[in-house]
Image 1 (spheres, one colour):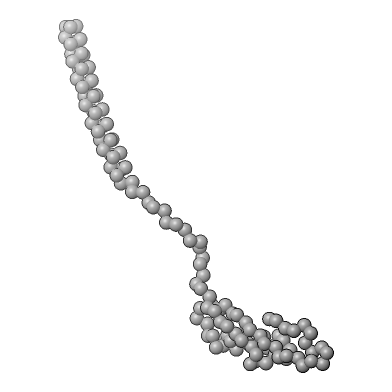
Image 2: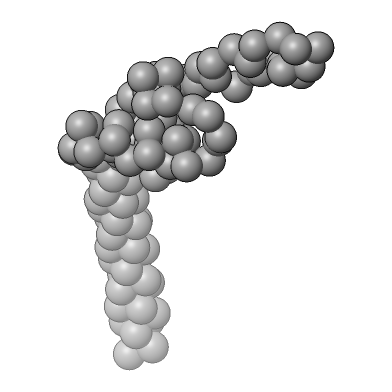
Length: 119
């Protein structure tokens, strides 16, 4: 709002007050009722203000953003890792089994030879 500080002094005629308002409103509101309410509020707030000298500009508020935007993090596909781990487990199990079966055979041969020598 702007007004003349020296208005009415020195016998000059007071210029009419012109007032404009920018209203940011929620979506879906009845704009004609809102304009009337704002004009009535401003008219009752200032002396010597006519309805014709009040301008109301309405702007619809954008939808609220409840969370800050985030960048989507690329997800790593671990299925290949799990397959490799399972394969490694199977290979190591097979090698351990064959190694122990070989050792078991050696031990059995040794035991049978040693028992054969005692008899």
